[in-house]
Image (cartoon, rainbow, N blue to C red):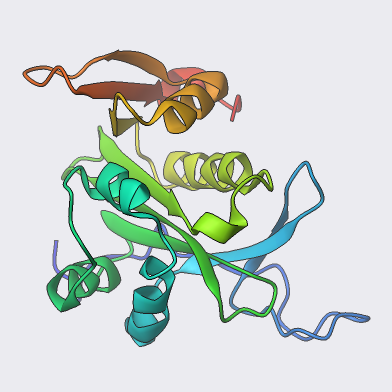
Amino acid sequence: MSDQTAKPTLSLKSKKSEQEPGHDLIVSKSIPLTTRTGFEFHVRPVSPSDEEALAAFFDHVTRDDLRFRFLSPIPEVGKELLSYLINVDHDHKEDFLALDIDDKTIIASAMIGANEDKSVAEVAIVVRSDYKKRGMSWTFLEYVVSEARRSGIKKLQSIESRENHAAIELEREMGFTAKSYPGDATLMLLEFDLAASGSKA
């Protein structure tokens, strides 16, 4: 489906259109979320103007987390990969960004890529190293799962390195089932049947 004909089924609509009373931030393009620890962050889909901020974000991601995210030991996220991440159709491919409450600092990224009939989609999340241990991974993934279900995706898959114990544990706690990835003993395949899980996530 081309970008011109795709309907933005994964695009977000803010619950707030103006500056919130008592809040010094305009959040018209972001959805506010709060973790179990009380940490607040905002989420919105990526846009082409985010390229510079996204590059800065990956400068604050550890080498191990880069390897876990892209399943390859890359030294940095270059222009070609950044272009792939920001050029999405907001229908079968979406990159959700989590931002600090300044609405400028990207602190996490979650990409969804679905097949043509949306029977299955792959999800991959990476969090900036100095924003870990605030409970945002759970809250962010929970939101992404909800958006995937709303868009009509039937099953989510996450391919994880067996060394990425934190991600595997979190996904299993959320309801993903885990098994060995076919043909690669170093990887795990985690799956979430959105059609069967209903409103669980």
